[in-house]
Image (cartoon, rainbow, N blue to C red; front, side, top):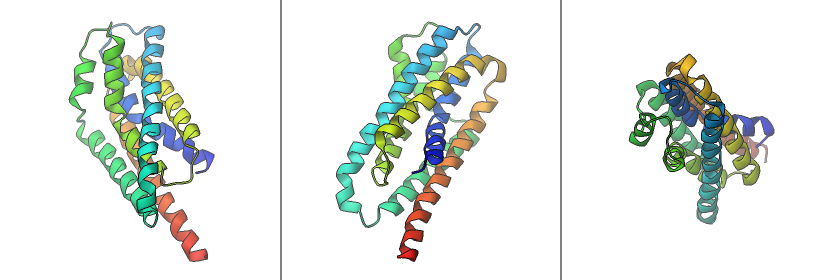
Length: 196
């Protein structure tokens, strides 16, 4: 995966957390920078760990699916991307995110971590997919974690000003990016077969 694709992947994976943080920021009367940084850091760490877990699971399964790994990667990324688009269009968030967004401003670190976990399940699925590709998983996980920390911090700070409508479009864009990456994985494999 080239650096541009890695950056796109990292930001695509952060869009659901970004959407949740915009919603949270929109509900707060006063957003403090330190609180936004703390929330961003927790989300970033959780989002960085999940692809590693998925990659480990995918790596174990790779010996069984190596002949069709490119198709699996394409289908999984397309399904994840489609789900993100659908969620953005339907504006349906999971119950954990909605519950976390209605909590008082001084939420505990555990509730923030739970919300981060709820928004990072897709990162674990992407980690499984990444095990089927030629990628440095550490670089990918760090990039995803940093992008998520940045996006959640910004989303929390800007949420009051820009409202929840941006969160919807961010999730749709993230879904489109994941589908595009899936198409690129499939194309690279099929183009490699054609030239061989």
